[in-house]
Length: 438
Ligand SMILES: Nc1ncnc2c1ncn2[C@@H]1O[C@H](COP(=O)(O)OP(=O)(O)OP(=O)(O)O)[C@@H](O)[C@H]1O
Ligand SMILES: [Mg+2]
Image (cartoon, rainbow, N blue to C red; front, top):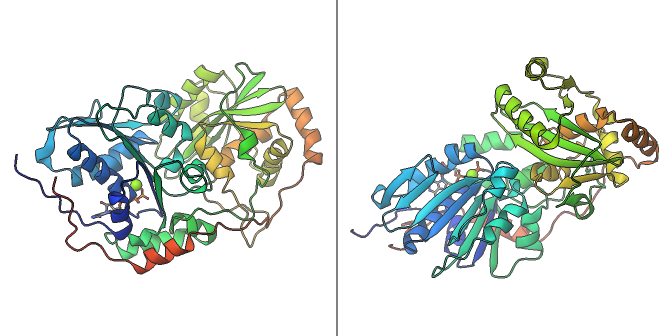
């Protein structure tokens, strides 16, 4: 086989990431900065340079694999290297014996299925949307004998979650982090795309979503949320009641939370969080959740009566939730401040939203309507929960609970300004864009 030359032209931050020889790497950027591209390119590089290696690409949902990662792979992987692509097995085999598998960490079952035989590398796309257990499970497989084993991840920050902890705050050994990469560093997207992004985000959301910075959100609605105390990896086996909170979406994610109530404490056991899901698919999800956790009422966003009716006709106890935002927030805040709310670590989107749900600057009693889907589902469930003991206890706590403090302020993260400057001033790609010949 002749030598293949990869004629890729990477942006400065992509190039830095691509060439890093750290065993563990992360690329944290604004949306559209070229994360998935450089993640996939890195996978192709390992597969080519290490014949016979097995690598796995993990994404939070299957549609992301189908609609984003496969097209990127197709764009960058030369046909003549491919022996076989099985959509059924979500596996690409290369002529040199290397294998690239694609897996989604969609739910608990998806995450458990990530366990398996040895691999030489893995790549997590949208790592901030997946729980840390995905990274940990995959690390356990990183031991294909005779290979230089590596792992990398790409994502846009979602508050200070585990990705910040393991790559920036207390970096794991042999790791390197490229953070604060702005969306605009991607020279391959149009001005119109960036303009439309900039219209969507302001304030701290702009810093996070467009500049890829880890941001400590001000004016947090749930300022008392304490990940160390509230995120748990084990939960009781049996509950007095199980209830569900449901927020409808389509372009935005739909969210269903399963909540077990025991001894007056609420345990969020599982989240479903995905966009472009139909009512019929959601019914299937709801049924699966009930099989796993038990039958219970679904307290639903009242703005979509047709969806509630569909649930009802499918035999699900769907009810219109009370959509009084402030009363719902008080119900959730009281559980938090009294230490009666626990969240299973697999519910990463709920955890992310709790860290970002903030009051608008100008309207102190109105939360910003961004990343609030799990927040809505949670308040629908907790305001409506009618278990006698549960209700009585929470009413009592409510008066004692401290109200959320609008304008609550913590210092913004520092240390990323220099990075930001660099990237803003260096908007050139590598002319010639040479990849090593492989
Ligand atoms: N080095 C490059 N050369 C050519 N095209 C690129 C390059 N990097 C990114 N692109 C293109 O820019 C677009 C956006 O890139 P990509 O999807 O990788 O960004 P992203 O940061 O993963 O976006 P999102 O935040 O939506 O996940 C894609 O069409 C991709 O093919
Ligand atoms: Mg992407």
